[in-house]
Length: 137
Ligand code: HEM
Image 1 (cartoon, rainbow, N blue to C red):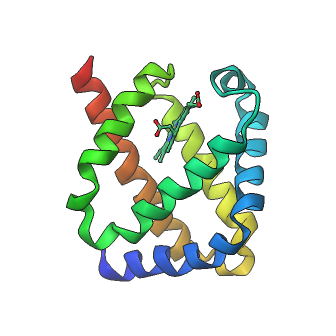
Image 2: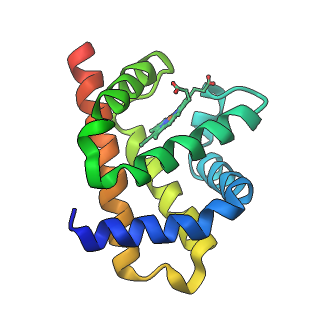
């Protein structure tokens, strides 16, 4: 990722952070609409899950300029996801729901450049998680 892309992601996340609860609602509503088969993998009560997801994205976004500091934590996260039943093919579905959510949350500020920068950010996290999961198997 370029420094410009990192700035686009960090600045746009600042606009989403104040509406984190609403964004998490949009995200999971969208995810379970496009992929209802994933719903049983998650707990009935999603409140904790929503908080954890936004926190993890926040941590990752704030660390993009020093990715090496979070790689170990993201690898651990990927290995834990094997235990949740998550498969490689689920990552694109979740990534799609994330980009959809950002589009809704940011409105006109979700320019093609912002979208591309977020797609790269998610792709980076997902590939580290999938690699770690594959090596653990
Ligand atoms: C970059 C991608 C992702 C991030 C940052 C992320 C983040 C998280 C975090 C922080 C947790 C809390 C538990 C923990 O830390 O182990 C979690 C749990 C979970 N995630 Fe993800 N996740 C990602 C991708 C996915 C994908 C692709 C799926 C597929 C459906 C998924 C399904 C789940 C499930 C089922 C749980 C456990 C729920 C529970 O039993 O409490 N995640 N995720």
